Image (cartoon, rainbow over all chains, first blue to last red):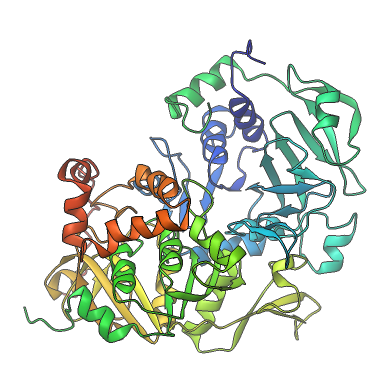
Length: 254
Length: 307
């Protein structure tokens, strides 16, 4: 992929931004979604509104690169600075269209684990935990997982469900009492996966320069491909220009 | 100006944070983290603390590495810039320097738990985490159905910290304080806490605080102690005062990869300096100066006049 004129992270940011519709209320996470939100605002979703769980609401992206959502440039010019319960309350009420989640492990039902790797109770690795991700997965109208594509991260079944996806299949969320929502996409370094009526992920588009075999070899379950599986659209020049203006040193995107 | 509730950091921690206490910190998330207070807790070698917070960035990791902690009630523990916190992992995975109990929450359930504590009710219902393993049996939560309908609910138990520690931009000797920027769960934790320690960049006359009562974070009478500690939130940011020292988080991550490395880091940056003044000296004037806010972006004044 070295001859491509963009990095995998830039393609993921572009794919992430295209999930945002104009006027959407977006629960923006850390890292790549910070830039995906800013990109969408400048390209195709000028009326989108960003929620940050630390208690910030913005209708204009910050002027400079954010390393965390609490950085001073994310406060200056905010539409509102408030408590966490303001944004979480509106999320619970059903007023957030889309949220982003990063993942240590995601499975074919879109369940995400960011709590424990290995075997809980025996040899295990303690990961940082939910933060706000489990709330976004529980309560947003839809959520998107952004993750590196390899068979340690895309697994048959997560060992611990931090952020609930479709559980073990269609109807599971309703059974648990979740009010709405579920995963709408997994954006990886190799592909974009979406979810069928059975609650399982399938490959909807393959990134340029990647083969179906690359994806099979790097996915922890026998992954299915959409009959009309396409190539993920490449970033437009204008999109790359905007991303590089936001992140000139490539801190997040190179 | 009388000294009122003003204490030195050493005195405030000595009097109001005891062994076995539950301590809420890092309540505004990535900004306004009371690192200076946490470091004083480490220097005074408090033990068996329960830490409470949504995310804490590396302050929780430092307190765990120093052996101050028995239990953590939190949504996320690590290093926001670098991902994992090595001390947290060592304690959770292999009991080094000691075993810790982890009570997993999400950010929203920490917020609701503290709100229940602030409201004086035993729990608050929520619709989050249903189906998440965070909410499974054996954890702090219970399930139920709305008595007014058929919605499934998660019951989040009240969280009442023994002491809540907040870093703010300015405070007065009587306990009034102003904070601005993202506030996270600061207000809820301040209302829930049995004691409240406010650490301020600046001590101002009471008239400055009362000139803008809408910006007051905590009812002043609930504040137990006020500490004047400029730079006390470094490496986190304080809006209007200084930016976040991103590199410091990366350096901490590298330095604490081993337990011995963590001990050396604590010796250098916590035990070795004795207090925040010398911490900032060690950081160096150039580096500290480079983080200072130089711009000027004041809020428009508002008129509170009654006549």
